[in-house]
Figure 1 (cartoon, rainbow over the protein chains, first blue to last red):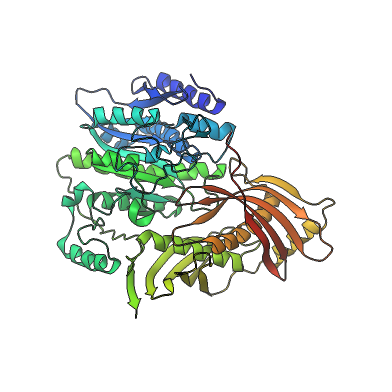
Figure 2: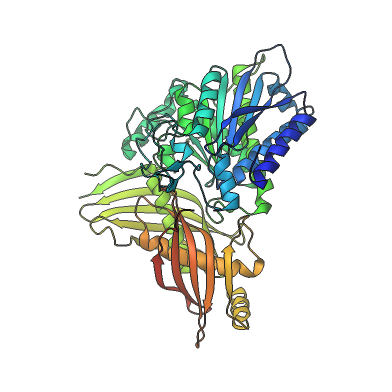
Length: 359
Length: 220
């Protein structure tokens, strides 16, 4: 059981949640960290004869992003508080099980509380223990080591000695791999920046649910924009279902306090990277895979003030519920539910980006 | 012909524009933050570099409902990678006058019996004591200058934390602070210690008289 007072508090909370909601919640062992701390996840599952599909959410893959584990805890609390009274929640709990990993990078999280607030990576030793830590979100087996990484342990984006070299990565990957047939949605919570990111980080190729492109008349417009930006004409990841759902989620989030999130593929709106958990989840077939980068946009960055924790969690809840609700309606439609394409949400990273050359 | 820039580069250029505008127009009572980018275009200029044309919306950190529209042009130079990018901007409309708050802060510091010394602003939980808010905003202005001087198309700097700030005794009217800050670079995700010497006067604005990148502390 946990070292580090903060982690102890979280482990205690997980046990209490299981005890006071035993009809719904079970705590499970996921694996061990490089410092032999235990990783636990919570499963929220309504007893039923039906076979269910799975929504996975992990928090705290990067140690310093404290708002992230706070959100996972908030999410669990909200579901358990409202599942009997909230029709949206009770509907999807008939069909979906929720798996929540509140702190993925336990060692790093403890280290950020006890030693170095802005630590990011895990704590595995390299180079005869003269250098520590792999960026767990560069360590998954998705174009591992190809772009947006460092092979140097002293870097914050060190990708490790090989794909899944880290026990934390293996613990998550092995579990998800085993359950992948049933996982409809992979969510991973980070901060900061206020983004909802879709695959991919390492290429501008559109993810596999490209066949769900919507609206031919709109595709024409996109081809023009693609020409102007010089991106591969086929790599037009803009109008696909993942993006649309993310746009809907961002709109719901904004409705609460006016907080604006940008939506798009990582490689287009942020930077190129490889080995991310979100890309890997999508590559192995999980249809809806998102990274959330929570508040703020840089004024406080990782050091988000405590008075912003609750509003951040409340607004993010709306976004996550939008996604889960969509997935529930899509895979478990009840009669009479028609999914319209809705607003196009043409969300190139900025409204229009075009280039010209001066001769 | 170089390949066109990724979309993400325009976001970094916008962040740089905001940092510059904050450097030029910010102060201990005013912090400007990028709220949105409404338009962006890039222009490759042969043998010179790449120019970004941006339309931005900035908001006042202390009063989020105060927004201003700006246009900015950023030229990243081709040849000399050590040259800071050229930044030009126009702000539409007026920024709120901060003379009163500036003078309050100025007099507060002037009347201190001992030179101000502080650490960890914000603290680990993001908290800033109210009397330290102007110190933090001043650091943010200065960090905007450092970001400008050190930015390329592939970097984006944010002020992560003030580790240490010490007031420097002066015989004239200016206030002077020596800051040790941590900058967060978005693309590499590095936390970079940086030292800045900052002069300020209510009528004469902010000047960074000296700054230097510091080595990362030894692993522990």
